[in-house]
Length: 232
Image (cartoon, rainbow, N blue to C red; front, top):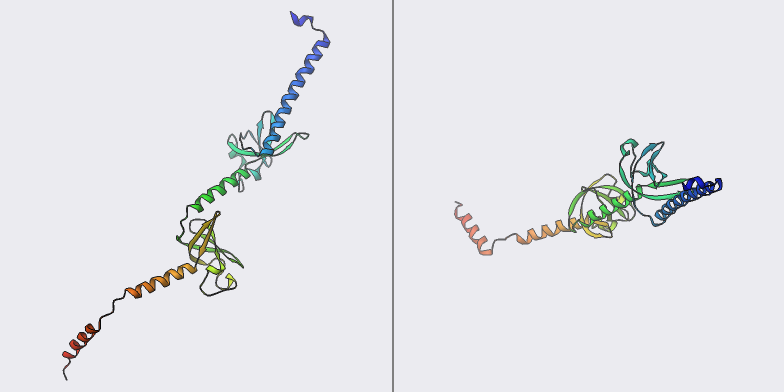
């Protein structure tokens, strides 16, 4: 057989070549990880194990670590719930010398939540009237948490017909308010309390215009009928 004719030098050379092949394959994986990091490429990975303060996922022979703080937007009470699950992540840190790769799902989850929020805001029609609660007060206006879970700003000029210098003059955190959506722009809701006052005033004015006053001859007839029944 051909192998029987190989010398020890031939075997050593074959072993060295095999190690070089492994080194090349290993280097290729590290280069891919660096590329994923630089291009912020989303990756779908499977959680293979739970360790102290996080979970791990093996990618091409590299043991990648996902800290518990980067698994979700909020606190993760039980890391074991992620075991065996597929999640979307980004490569955030690659240190080949230390053999360390850090992954994170938090950024993708935050971006998804922001896109969903923008879509919900875009679906709100201008003119919609909603109840809300004052969340915070700023010199330029009041932020209101609406009944649908979204938030918007009532600019100080839209709080009342009466000119006020600071929202705290008429509002405080926790106040229940009714507001009208007057603009939807750049993923933000502009709200107004003043517009509702204007709507109320307009309705009252319309009601007054629609009141039918009796004509002068009708008044005369009514008075004549009244005096006719009075006996002196």
